[in-house]
Length: 184
Image (cartoon, rainbow, N blue to C red):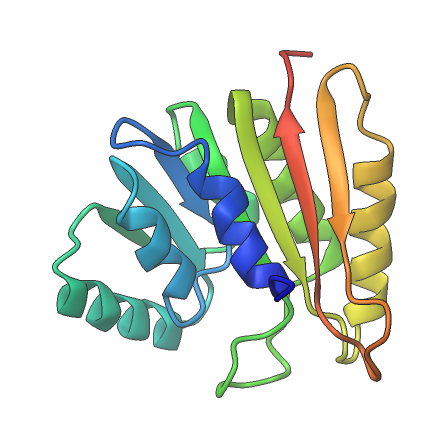
């Protein structure tokens, strides 16, 4: 069976993570990615602008007995105020928080700021996965901005890949994967 993009995203990141790693969940949401990262790393910095995300993620981590995630009520574009260490892996799920206010969405400008800051802090061999959900108002603009940005990364410093369903109707989410090969 072909892997769904979110499962490939987790596999892609798990390959480089260990209990000395620092990771970032740039879009905390319901805490699925935060919990995944917390189970494999020394520390996770998780960001969201909605109280509901902090609450749900906190509950999820408590159920799993994980206490190595710092849940931050702030936009991912401000991660440089919180993350001083180098990062081994980071994940984004762009769009909106399921079962919450669908008008609160990730935006191209702040998403690109966060991606740039993560790539600066990413260790050589570190990885970034970006799940792009774009079937909502504003989603196409963000999708195009992210793809344009990633396409322009220098190939001597970054390996990039796109994993996308080809025969699905509507706007199926897809995965962008980035691996830092060496420092700029």
